[in-house]
Image 1 (cartoon, rainbow, N blue to C red):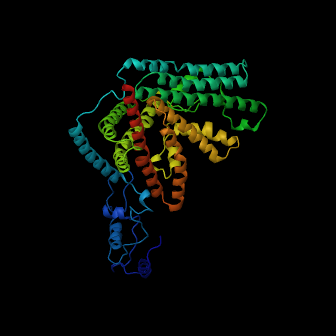
Image 2: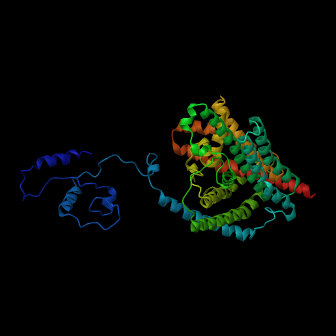
Amino acid sequence: MAPPPSMAAASNRAGPGADAGEPSLRLRRAPSVDAAGELAGDSSGGRRENGGPHPPPNPQQQQQEMLYYRASAPAHRRVKESPLSSDAIFRQSHAGLLNLCIVVLVAVNSRLIIENLMKYGLLIRAGFWFSARSLGDWPLLMCCLTLPIFPLGALMAEKLIRRKLIGEHVVILLHIIITTSVIVYPVVVILKCDSAVLSGFLLMFLASIMWMKLVSYAHTNYDIRVLSKSTEKGAAYGNYVDPENMKDPTIKSLLYFMLAPTLCYQTTYPRTTCVRKGWVIRQLVKCLIFTGLMGFIIEQYINPIVKNSKHPLKGNFLNAIERVLKLSVPTLYVWLCMFYCFFHLWLNILAELLRFGDREFYKDWWNAKTVEEYWRMWNMPVHKWIVRHIYFPCIRKGLPRGVAILISFLVSAVFHELCVAVPCHIFKFWAFFGIMFQIPLVFLTRYLQDKFKNIMVGNMIFWFFFCIVGQPMCVLLYYHDVMNRQAQASR
């Protein structure tokens, strides 16, 4: 940057022939002097990178700085934005504000916890989560223990096709039977048994994960066979195929895939060098702490709120809004704890124990400007699976992009409904419609983002729909439906 005109003129007037005994009138600019260095009293014009002590100041440099801060020297030299302005807020560090928010949250929630305990007492109970008739959950445990039969069946089908004992159509039919059975079998067991909600949810969750893994296993092996035949015929695909990912399936690769924190099958994965045992223990302790915190919030806050509320579709409209707003904060806390426990702690623990290298289980979804960005970033294992096995196969079949997105959300909605409705023994399709409602929200938030051209507007709209509208309403709907069903069953 060129010096201001006043400084340049003074510099030109004080030429080489100036009298050495005359006080210098030149206002020379000190090197690298910034506001941070000025306020910190940094005589060198900045901080040393290694954080060590500064060298003793140079007398000539001190004289330059004294002239630099004279009253005639300009104090404003370039265009600067305020740190909290919309153009500069995302270029600043907000660590201090984050610490302030943490202190405020701790103070406010500590008061709420004390007030809640004084009003209700300790409400922790296991009856809602675990069945009073514990033997009723044994069929679910047996079903869970027999689920590994289906991956072994998928491996046997792949072995048969590799040895050319069955044809391509037969192996596809076998995989369809296996993947369908791995979902239908737990659904039948849960619906026939009067089990607890939590037991049924865990079983459906594991069955859904296994279904996605087996679909990826079948689809990937089919694609490997297609690419192998193409390369044998001299097709251009041979230049883009990694031989490491074209190996035949083995029991070892299948076992690793079924345990690994991924839904996308491949014969080899990036691996780390060792297992950090101390790190694993620390993460397990954190996981236990946050799981207990989730249970505490649910029992002490969410249950009393929903007990004292009416069905949101049958009661007073203003009362329903008040209940939803009151539920928004505790449900958000529970959801954030669930995200941290599962996606950060548990999946990283699995990855560490299995030395699984790719640990991008989520991205910075909290900065999402639209609902579409949120769904692309918050659950990377499912996102990669959908892109790999649903979205791009639809695109390759010639379907329009909008239809491919619709099919992707449809599959997601079906499995959300299964994981919630089957354990609750209620098929009202609240979860299904909740996921399908995301499609118009995708276009709405995209339109608002394009209209306002401001990342903060889109992010606030996303958080509004995420915190206030969606989750509390689903909690109220399903809770009252479950309670009504249990009341009718007890008559």
